[in-house]
Amino acid sequence: MAGALPLRLVFKNLFRHPVRSALTAASLTVAFFLLCTLQSLVVTLDAGVEDAKSDRLVVQSAVSLYVILPESYDAKIRSVEGVEGTCRWTWFGGYYQNPSNFFAQFATSEQTLFSIYPELSIVEGSAERFMSDRSSCLVGEELAAVYRWKVGDTVPLIGTIFPRTDGSTWNFRIAGIYRSSAASVDNRTMFFHHEYLSKSLEDGAANGPDGVGVYVVKVKDGADVQSVMSRIDGLFAKGPQRVQTTTEAEFQAQFVSMVGNIPFFVSSIGMAVFFAILLAVLNTMLMAAREQTHDAGILKALGFGGRTVFLVLMLQSLALSVVGGGLGVLAAVGSSAGIRHALGSMFPLYEVTTETTVAGLIGAVVLGLVAGLVPALRLGRLSCVAALRLEK
Amino acid sequence: MISLRHVTKRYWRGGQHLTVLDELDLEVRDGEFCALMGPSGSGKSTLLNLVGGLDYPDSGEVCVAGEFISDIPDSALASWRAETVGFVFQAFNLIPVLSALENLELPLLLAPLGRRQRREHALHALELVGLADRAHHRPSQLSGGQEQRVAIARAVVTDPALILADEPTGDLDRDSADQVLDILARLNREIGKTVVMVTHDALAARRAGRVVHLDKGKLADRPPENGE
Image (cartoon, rainbow over all chains, first blue to last red; front, top):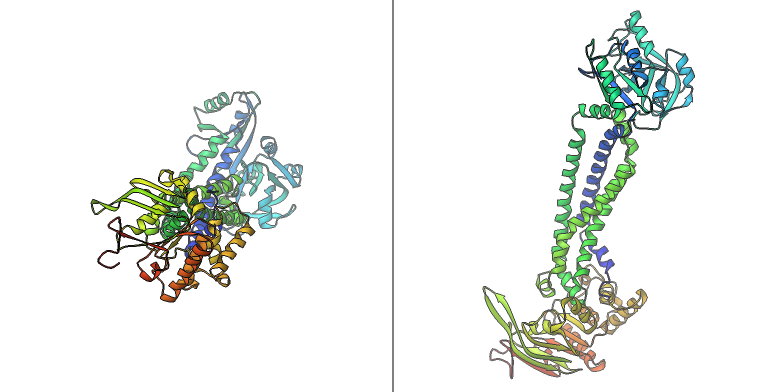
């Protein structure tokens, strides 16, 4: 019986200073919204790396990702032992109607795209139509939804790296809308024929560097990936362009690190936010403990043990943190679609995952426990006489 | 009901030991209404704290309701208090965020009662002190006399054998003090509760069946010269 908990007292103490409790809960809400959002950005950045296939390699210039490779390398790479196929990827860098309508566009090998990327499937239109029409394109379903495009529409793009010589737009007919089942390819990208780009450059219809950005290589089943990488690098060791072959995961990680050590930076901000809000809640609980010291003495005089007194304050800390933090987590989940839309092509895969949601809720519980521990222990251990002697 | 043998209590104050109770012996019988009087610092409240199991003596034995409570560990002493003692304090000591009824339900959480039974017991105790119509008022919405009557109701709601009152009329006007003393006297006379009351008030002490004087931590045969 000594363990009976006066839950009504816990509840009423939370509203002893309603403004203070509301402000603390609001601070927690903002902090946990920020924490979950920042964590989701890190998760989004890492998603491409985690979903990268181990049997896909990326061949890029050994000098820089911005240095293009000759088209003649395609056949040579395909001839390397252990290589099943290649797919060209060249960054197009155009925009639709005005520069703010920016999304990723790649000139690619239409014949091998689907065999090298089995995670891609056509949800509208057809792959055959895409392959047979040189000026057609594929768009991701999220991209199509943003601009309300449908199969058969023409998408005019203004080239920045590859401007057309007559100043006109590049026009691509949508042959299909794809969906990617893995984070290695997002659903906000446009693919078109590499041959269309090459031919336009060759004919003088467009200006720009002639070549291929990177070659994506599919390794045959059972082939030793490291050996294949070494053979490809060795093949071009004497030029004309030396290459660097990496696994797709390494390539994605390198791509992320190009924009700085964002995961570390964002995680550091997250930790700072967590620590700051911990101090704020600790301060609130210390004030609450000071105010409730006399009540603790009364409880003990009535026959409640130190454990009950400890739990009364601890539950207040937990309730405040879980409600405030939980609202923040819910806000992050609820605003996920809006944030993804606002971030646009920068973070097309942005989402608050279940893991992030659970981690956020666990974080709120941990924060409540840590913030309440010291004040509650002090109150629980205080003698009844000392607590009652304190001025109300 | 209460038996104290050679009880000594010292406090460490201002860098030196202060002997508040010095080899004190005291007996209080079952059903007795005993007033403890003495000047400030004579050890009255300390004695009450020891009898109520709120504190331990440095030496000697404290036996209350057949239990040597000076030997009971702190964790078990809380349960003993809940079952045996009801406290009434000078400053009322009601929990400010709870209503009168909720303050009375609090000690009943430690008894094997359901929610409805707790409410019935609490309401009955409020009726006993004439405050059933103030059940849902918070302490800040009650007068001092009403607060003290609620505190008395809380002290008896679990039906303890012993009521310890530490200057229960100290913060009250004469009329309110009389009402409180009437209730304590009735609890003693009609229900048979043993009441030990610390007081500076000679009028209040007259309501008790026996007056014990304390001076410098010892029992005194008569009030000390300074008149308290």
